[in-house]
Length: 288
Ligand code: PT1
Image (cartoon, rainbow, N blue to C red; front, side, top):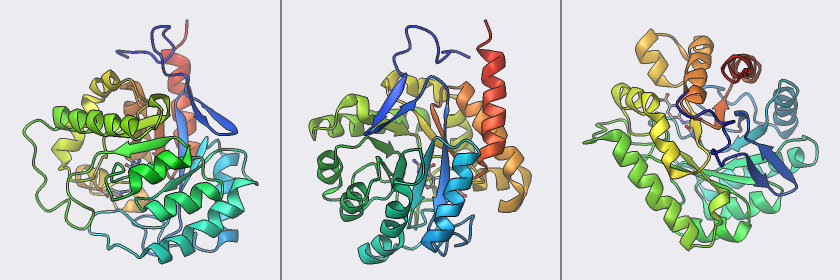
């Protein structure tokens, strides 16, 4: 490890999510809770609030440190939905979850109105794949008072995989995240409440994704917690020629690599598998 998260000079130790503090001295596991009928992986199995609640409780029992609730699929080629559709999907779920599960709830959205209502309903982190670039998003996030995750994406989900191109993907992603971080601070979001994410699979070829993972350490220069989402993504399908439901082992391998290269939060579908692997790796790597 080029920069062990336990070394004394490393400043990132926690993320304050309102009444709950996320301990980042070890990698945190973010469990994916899709409330979408067209999600690329879960195929809408978690639509009803009761079903969503049960799945969230299972992920927490398996060791999830955060639950990420999303109502709009952002997989390549996904179509956008209306504000009202997204609110109808996610608000009942956030309300059902936030007093029941013992971990912070994150809201995966790019829409200011969803940010406002979800945080009012108890969401304690805003996770925006557009990096708070939509009109009104920065102000809504700042006013909510919760931490934010700003992600890099080239293009938008509908077109992003058509011809992703970079001169230097690592440098460009870092420059983008640095600029977004400055915008967040200018809008009044405290620096300690900003998480960054290189956006694996969002306007990137397989080679771009691999370069970003191999050089993830470079993002630590931003001084912000790093979140990554690699779970079940088409990168794995491309390398191993496996369907989505057969990508768990490869997803765990990518999560381990990401943590070893500095990721503080891993967004995953397979919570128990990932947690066991990450904790085992940390026990060995950090042994002293
Ligand atoms: C992510 C992420 C996310 N990914 C954050 N939020 C998705 N912060 C949703 C594919 O290539 O990485 N970070 N929210 C899911 N999006 C994708 C993108 C799903 C690409 C699949 C692919 O298969």
